Image 1 (cartoon, rainbow, N blue to C red):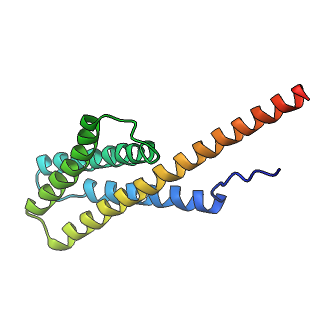
Image 2 (image 1 turned 180 degrees about the horizontal axis):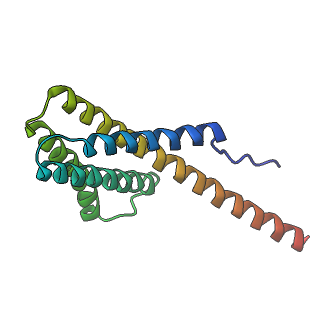
Length: 149
């Protein structure tokens, strides 16, 4: 019996990593040249990093709990709370900054691009991990069957 292990194509993986790298680059450029006070720049850098890590944690949490709930309700609250708090505080910081509207839109779009590419990257990495685990299980079963037979 032939078992098919689904894997992403190389082109897809390159596109996912390239998109993530472009998003990080755009955010870094936007934040590096952010006009205004240093405290605003520091707040936005922390906000972007908070959002980035919270997006990775949220995507892992959702994937870990897709078949059955394996985490506590408090952890669910922490994960979702951190993500929505990060997004809300970063949006608030961006909205309240006294900078040109065009610059705000650039920061907003690059930030949202970063978040969406983070979810896509997390899924792609997890899919590759799952495929590797399935392949290892299949190889182990085949070698056990071969040695028993």
